[in-house]
Amino acid sequence: MRDAVIVDVVRTPSGRGKPGGKLSGVHPVDLLAGVLETLVERNGIDPAQVDDVIGGCVSQIGEQSYNVVRNAVLSAGFPHSVPATTIDRQCGSSQQAAAFAAQGVLAGAYDIVIACGVESMSRVPLGSSLAGASPSGERMHERYPDGLVSQGVSAELIAAHHQLSREALDAFAAESHRRATEAEASGAFSREVIAVPGVDGLVDETVRASTTAEGLAGLTPAFRTDALAQRFPEIDWRITPGNSSPLTDGASAALIMSAARAEALGLTPRARFSSFAVTGSDPVMMLTGVVPATRRILTRAGMRMEEIDAYEVNEAFASVPLYWLAETGADPARLNPRGGAIALGHALGSSGTRLLATLVCELEDSGGRFGLQVMCEGGGMANATIIERM
Image 1 (cartoon, rainbow, N blue to C red):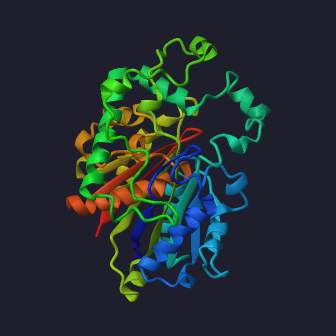
Image 2 (cartoon, rainbow, N blue to C red):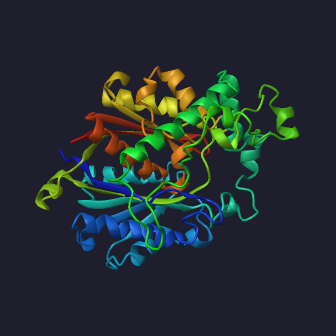
Image 3 (cartoon, rainbow, N blue to C red):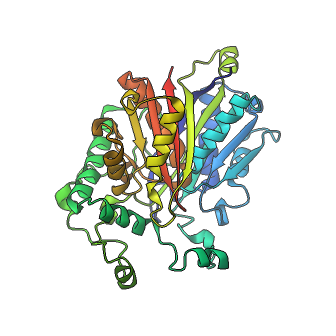
């Protein structure tokens, strides 16, 4: 029985995904290339030994088009023999990349593989990949005659249907910034965050230490329109920029291999992959898949929630982890203990391996054994992964 292990996992600091953000001057190919180069260098790996590089990216257009991961592999100086592919499972793209990589190792198709992701939302804005066209054909319109909605509206529907107050949403968001600020001050991110050539500092630009629930209460809702208010009268519009994840630039990568190959190379694995699950869910509610994905993976692993020492549930919007907590009965203290995407940012294609980096480090520092990572995804899907610290 082969084990798929995580030897190392790293990320860039999070940059504001707008012009002028600290990473906005870096081409996304170069951003990811720097992460790949650092990953192999700090582990003493000859890149020629890498069987494949699988990476996530959501807006695959312009500077992120034409297989951005292959372009990053070449830009990192890897041999031409190292292949690469770019996948899109929306916000969970690099989490899915890690799952595909680990599953390839378990199947014997790979010995060494890198899972990664990149998104430069400052240079390739969210939605630009539509190129002015609709992604829905006639058959989609027939099935959903009223049309699908943005994730922000889905977050509003979750808040309305599950009675999550504006005060609770803002309090959760403020706590995310508090935890991230505390983790940063303690050096908790020092093993995962790496330098970006030409960019000063290793600090996440999206973390705001001064954030308070009282301050967030003054922000106005971000997604209300008159047409949407008429369509969804149950919504009282509680989702704001403050209790949502910010537009973000970033890249991340994980070095994954068989336990036998790690031993042969004299490398010490940090964690192993224990279980995987992916689910579909209602594409209008869209973000609720985190709950069935959690239930599915726990069943597959034969585990109870109480056996999980830390949970990383992506904070696309505060309503998602709050809904997840209410439905699963999980311990709030174990949820995103170092802050989540509301503070640390959500560089879409990179977020999955960013969460993995934070989860591995949290388990190491806390002495926990098992970690659960769950990501809601556009189109009504969710990805779940359980890892075990070694």
